[in-house]
Amino acid sequence: MDANLLSLNQTTPVVPSFPASYQRGIQRIALPYLNRTIMVSVDDIMYLEGEGNYTFIFTRDRKRFLVSKTLKEFEKMLNEIVFIRIHKSYMVNLAYVQFGVLNKDRVIRLTDGREVTISRRRMKEITSLLNTYIQSTMN
Image (cartoon, rainbow, N blue to C red; front, top):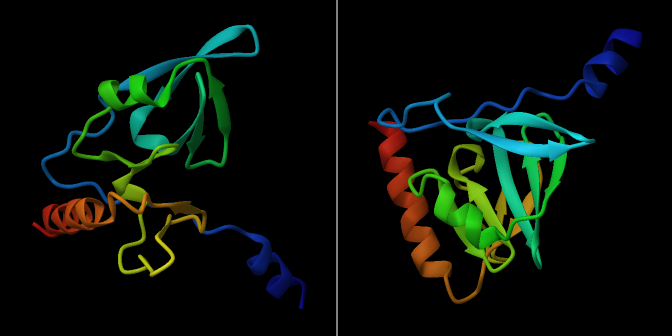
């Protein structure tokens, strides 16, 4: 019985699916954190949440970093093939999106179970971008 409890408490690893043309491990971002600067690989960022002049960065190892940059600044900096702005306050890494889980509630589910809302106005455009991304990962 203890073995069953242990297997239920363990979280499944979050595995991204990048397109073949995307070169992983090249870009890193320097983030100020606890009086020092840490380097975070762009490939480990699952999504970003903007809040005014600040942005929360959520990584695949469930860490959250607060940065004093706007989401618009990150939108210019990050690769548009992998990162898309799906809402005024959200930007997601397509490698961590569970495809086929896009529902009528305008919510994208990420591979770790988190859900992020899609803008009503950009729904068609985002659906098209998601389909294009799926095709690029299949090739």
